[in-house]
Length: 129
Image (cartoon, rainbow, N blue to C red):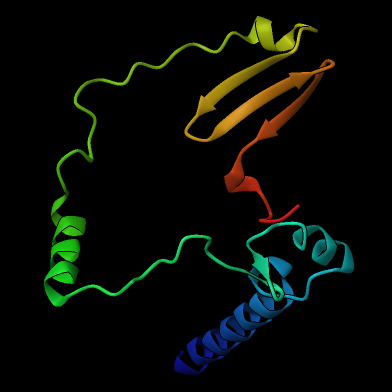
């Protein structure tokens, strides 16, 4: 049993390592077209994206402890004050030939242009154009 578990963990680690190193989203090599496209951005410097506003992640020990406490205990303002009402989706509007933009919740939208439907959701994006 231990041999199977060890073999599984080794194969899993190899698979994850290959995925991270070969998938462009996780650090694989960019194509020539991607490099040219990214070079147009002012925050793309020497082959890397940089913050336009300098950011420091240095925190004192008390700030770190406070942040950890808030993440477990919950900070004020993290929950809505009241009930969040959900709107019904107007499927007739979406099915019509008129252009429309429908908010599906969080960051997801359904865009209808020229009777074509496009689902916009950054969580489904591969991370680059």
